[in-house]
Amino acid sequence: MHIEIQRKAEIPLTKQIYLCIIDHIRSGLLQEGEQLPSVRDLSKQLGVSLVTIVKAYKKLEEENFVKSVQGKGTFVNKETQGRVDTQQNMLSFNWQLSVQDYLPRSQFAQFHFVPEKIHLSSSMIDPGLLPNRYLEREINQVISENPKLLSQYGSIQGDEQLRFAMYEYLKGLEVPTTPENILVTSGSQQGIDLVARTFVGPGDVVVMEAPTYPGAIDVFRGRGATILTVPVDNDGMRVDILQNLCDKYKPKVIYTIPTFHNPTGAVMTLKRRRQILNIAQSIQSIIIEDDPNSEIYFDKKPPVSIKSLDQYGHVIYLKGLSKTLAPGCRIGILAASGSIFKRLLAAKSNIDLGSPLLTQKVILPFIKSRKMKDHTKKLRTALKVRRDLVLDLLSKNAPSEISWIIPKGGLNLWITLPSWIDSNHLLVKSKKQELTFLPGSACYAVEHENHHLRLSYSYMNEKLLHQGITILCEILQSEILLKKKQNHSPYF
Image 1 (cartoon, helix red, strand yellow):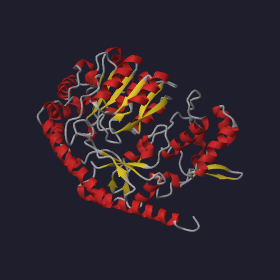
Image 2 (cartoon, one colour):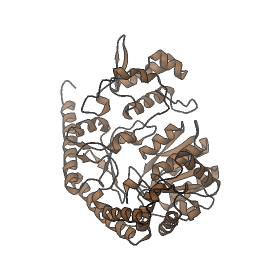
Image 3 (cartoon, one colour):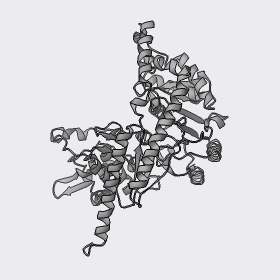
């Protein structure tokens, strides 16, 4: 078990160890019944006092993540895993725990694809809303016209025609770039990973929003970064707090999702976008602007991208096409400039020598044609209907103690529960009724926040959405009613 501690960070070592073990458990890297290292062994491994480890283990046991057995050791509890069925016996594989890894967490993968019938946990789009038939015809036509395509490698930077088409597409979004400064990636997740591999090493400071996209947390934690967080309000990242952090720590990277923020749905104001860029320029920092859903707006268009304001190459812009067009193609683009772009291209060559050529050729005609604009317009209409359905059901059925942010676009709804409700425990109960969502704790890099959850209204049809939100409200009503009874009990 790899635990990365930052001795210069303001977070106490005990809390760092405690949070890291929770990350391992929630990522499935430590499974139920597995034994944690002894207090003495972990103390020696990390170079910290026995007391520090004892305090971390005690806190984990108090919160029911682990159980200590006298004379045997400390073991991961079943309840914290969020599983209904018992996993296979792991005893025969216990030797593997002695093999050192460097994975601090991988929480997002735990919720990306799940077997539950009502799948509200990951922000994917209902396949019925995507142009599957068109792409099917394109695959057949592309292979028919160029049968040698499957035996060819593509350019490491990406197909030239696709890069030119994406340059035109981004121009429509007011994102300035050139085909020469576009890199085709295997989804925007690879774009984040490329930046992290190229520019982030152990101890480098990365600023992220709190909460934020879990997949990005996993990547930066995997690089050993010191992650500092800035809260998000209705207008996006709190610039006043960011300024204070930057004055003190001078981060190497600032990662932000300014438009239809994941998970809260917030839209950063134009004023704050300018302020963040000014801060990055003043400290020579890189901004990663992750833009998965800016086309999916329900009322008015969001402000222009931070990239559109950038004159000196501080912004690395990421745009994924997987969600809104073809998840199976796994195509995204990265736009940057100067030596930063050249180094990212070199990193791409080291990783995979280029994204698959076939999938690039398949989506190319769609991107170039009017069909892309028509598809996006229809998608906005369909997703607005689903968002409104969820909001209506919550307004009618959710307990008054529950609150949420109304998203003006994107795919997600952020819900806040009473502080005493742990959404991870709520998930265990929901799974028993074939319902899943993303626990809010997965969206925090540092904070131990358990009383939030993210619902994605984009994947399920309206019938299943209605069923899922009704079930969730019933579970929440039951939890709150039980709490009220306990508060009035003479034994409470």
